[in-house]
Image (cartoon, rainbow, N blue to C red; front, side):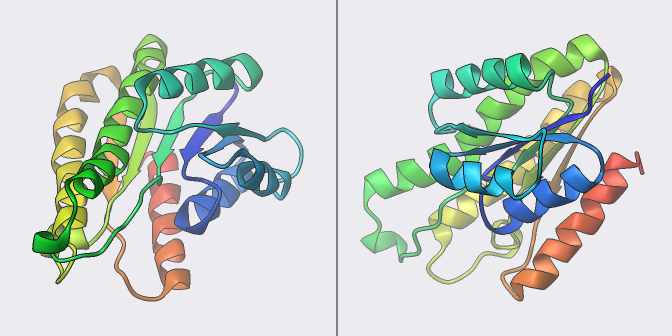
Length: 201
């Protein structure tokens, strides 16, 4: 069975570092981002056998279509990484409602939609791994990031509950909460964690 990893938000930052790691581990990688050109550049850096896809994770049909395209061109997804996210720092009293909705839709609803889409295949295969990229802000909070913290805190609760739902199907669900410090260190820490997940520990 082919090893296929879909990295949503894989065109930059932690998501791109994750895609590079999974490619080195022998996975065929689908790099998914809103900007297809940027995603193609990131996929091209991985070498042959990896593809780029465009998707707005906040849109259910976009997510469904993307999974269908990934399966058509690469195979069934058995490792999902959700690294797509946005951040619009502001005090709550100054935050526009549309910005609240956008943050929650991208950072929380988006991961719910991709997990649900991936789950269908993983249940059929009786196995799979999901890693959601959260943030320490979702655990500790931070000045001017109440809405962002809510979206990432919700991701923690969602991941823990989903893990209990699908454990009997041999599907692992984890959430990583990187700090807001050194970017290189964050990527290394997330990479170490993914290696442990991939090895089943």
